[in-house]
Image 1 (cartoon, one colour):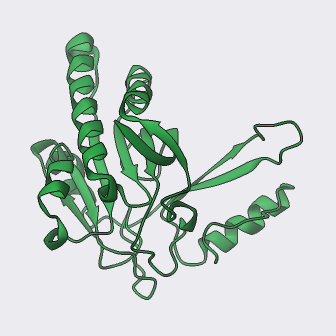
Image 2 (cartoon, one colour):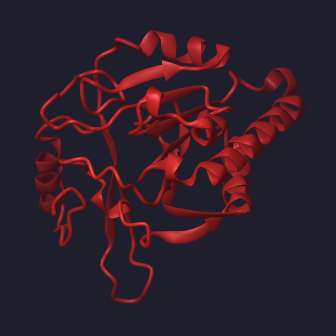
Length: 231
């Protein structure tokens, strides 16, 4: 099954607990004002991937000790059938890894999904897509409602554990406030000769934090030609 994605990264350490595989879906019709990920909005953007390709990445992440999987975007529920297939396959691989690792393996890896859709907007296809999600961060980003709650961009967004694993893993974080770095900076070399490096900011920045990172990167000789959070 095909999936339109914007990118992937491991280890992701700012969207959920521990070291995680991050997968960003492409396409979002919600277009929240102030969103830092405008580059993930256009359905024709990003690149074509597949459930099989993403499951290969998840298998590699598990082999490297991943604590979880985070799916964001973009809006993952705009590709509900593909998300359902991916999470079902990821759950199967998680079970296989647990059986293979036995007592040597650490805590079970969890699945966290970000969506701008509220619970009352989860129609049957969207609910099926979230069947294997251990926790969901739900709600549109509202720039006028800042919050210091960890992994959430605005005060209206809710962290919703959905399984026994989700409740065990996320209960301590429901009211936890950010105390450390909320953004992870990853700099990638250009893919083609002469192509400028790209800086990726991953996480949920506090108000004013993106401006800070612009300066921080500039002091290290990296000038941003494009900023995904600006029109």
